Length: 268
Image 1 (cartoon, rainbow, N blue to C red):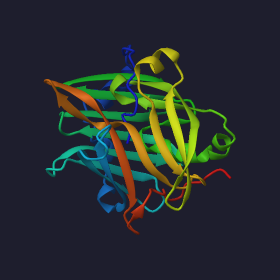
Image 2 (image 1 turned 180 degrees about the vertical axis):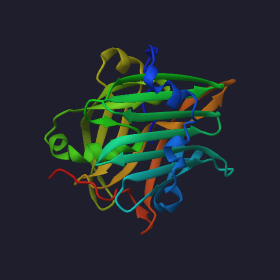
Image 3 (image 1 turned 90 degrees about the vertical axis):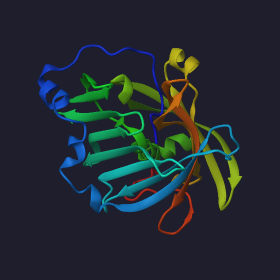
Image 4 (image 1 turned 120 degrees about the vertical axis):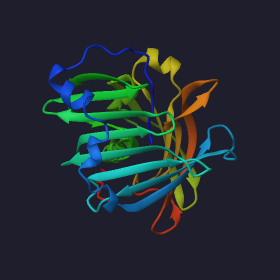
């Protein structure tokens, strides 16, 4: 899911202790240890060009996971069957350990890792690798781990309270704060659905970045729809640009609409 938001800050510095690990080793290190082929297909989705009235399909999306949800991988496949991008998330005790992104079409790769009390970023583009680090802190979210974070704060959102989250922008080698708020409730198949709006807390960034929208079931257990920037880049006038999509999710096992993540505690 999610390259979700691009900020407009440059990157500064890098951490010497991580140079050998992050510059000399490829980003595939995060999943080279194995275990990813043993994941089970959990959900699928169709990513349409945003604003096309769901007529222009850009990607088919898949989510695979292990039994306890500590390993998750996603793939974005074009209508021609080309693998455009893939993500690999490794969690330990519910906290981010490693996050790898392979942008196959654009030939780029990213790695976000926890190294002791730091979060270390690495991004390789045109054969050049940039690195940077900052304090790990609490509540760090990457890609599709945004969904369980929202679910763990569901009660607050249903009281119309804003929830903030620190989100990793892997292309910018930094984190930013996002604000999550309930935007609306609407009737849908099977009952009421809740529309959430997600945007940067910074007023400056909010002026330049379109919000993300997620549609959940009223109880917060299932997410149906995502509108926002996604992982694969698209070639536009000779330059690689983020893609904004309108995504619909399906449960792979029961062939029904909606994505219900395993082993996620929804606040009651």
